[in-house]
Image 1 (cartoon, helix red, strand yellow):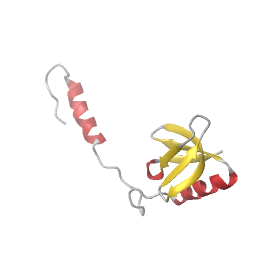
Image 2 (cartoon, rainbow, N blue to C red; image 1 turned 135 degrees about the horizontal axis):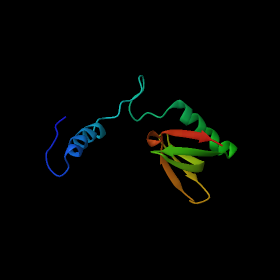
Image 3 (tube, one colour; image 1 turned 90 degrees about the vertical axis):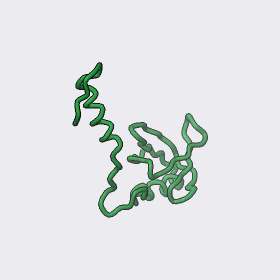
Image 4 (cartoon, helix red, strand yellow; image 1 turned 30 degrees about the vertical axis):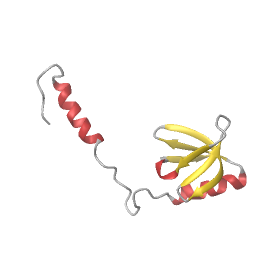
Amino acid sequence: MAYVQGSCGIRAGFCLLAGGVLAAPAVAEPGTRRGAVPAAFTELVEESPQNKTRLTSFLNGQALPAVVTKTIDGRTIEGRSQQFSRIVIRLPRVNAIAKQ
């Protein structure tokens, strides 16, 4: 790590290191391909419209509660909530799903 002299001082060296870490590619779990939808997600998504159960999807730290209304394809679902009449969610972007 190189330290840069100037107004930033040591912070400039930290910024260079943090930028390198943020630019690093994400590593997929062993045995799965990047962008694959976990089987547990698929199971919960298929069960939601039949039982009218609400699922909470967690996307980059944000919680999105919704009832699944239909599955567009194996990777995209459509739902609704009290706040929004139509929500489209790409499952490979979801970090976790909770059933309520």
